[in-house]
Image 1: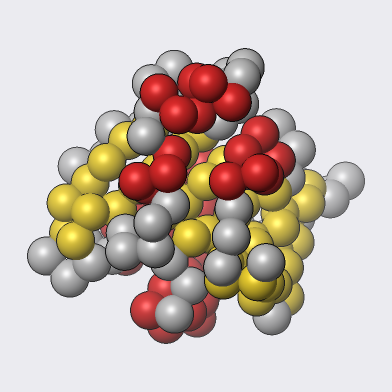
Image 2: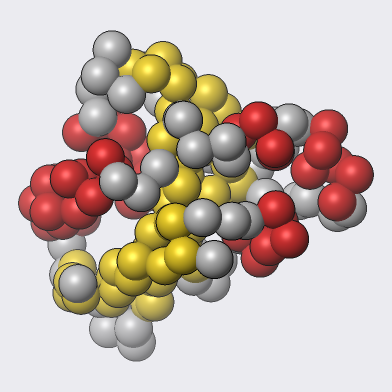
Length: 141
């Protein structure tokens, strides 16, 4: 799947198209340079999943957890500031990635050694005209 996002108002429609994939793919990896829209995409997705009290990007806390009536616990990880594998253990990465909870991970390359099973990659790229390209890729390790 590939989407060209010219306006933030399109995000709701984009999320509606990828939302059915979350039943099968519980771990969602977001790739893209700083400012490409990863956090904005996660926040819109959380809204569409029924979470209305968002905590913003977990850049400093690394992990935000949300309770959803439909999805149980949903995690949003922003691992930009993660320095070591030990820090990943400290935030409970193994429990978070156990496959039961829906989990959105920004900067997933920082925990590559912890990834296994099926996951969804959301690759965002920012174009010169500020259009964002979102490519959705199903993967398994």
